[in-house]
Length: 102
Image (cartoon, rainbow, N blue to C red):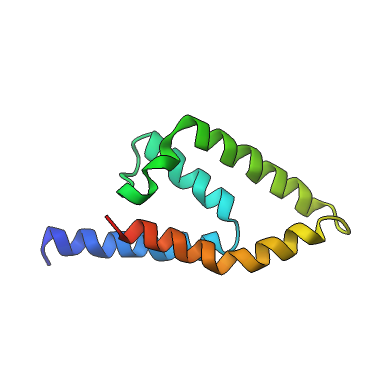
C-alpha cells in the first residue's frame, strides 16, 4: 500500500469517527478537532481549518459547556434536545464532507 493510499484510509477513518461523534456531541467534536489542529497534533483539511482559530475554539467551548449543563437538568431543555436531534445527521454529514474534501 502506498503512502497516499494509507493517508486516504486514515482520513476516511477520521471522517467516519468524527461524523459518528458529531451525531452525539457535535460541539465537542468541533472543539476537539480544532484544538488538535491548533496544537499541531492533527493536520486538518482545508474545509476545517477555521476550527483552529482561537475565537472558534472559545465559542465551541462555551457552547459545549452550555449544552452539557442544559443536559443535566432533567425536565428543562426539551427544545434544545429537539433541535439537536434534528441537526445531528446533517451535522455529521457536514463534518464528514469537510474532512474528505480538500
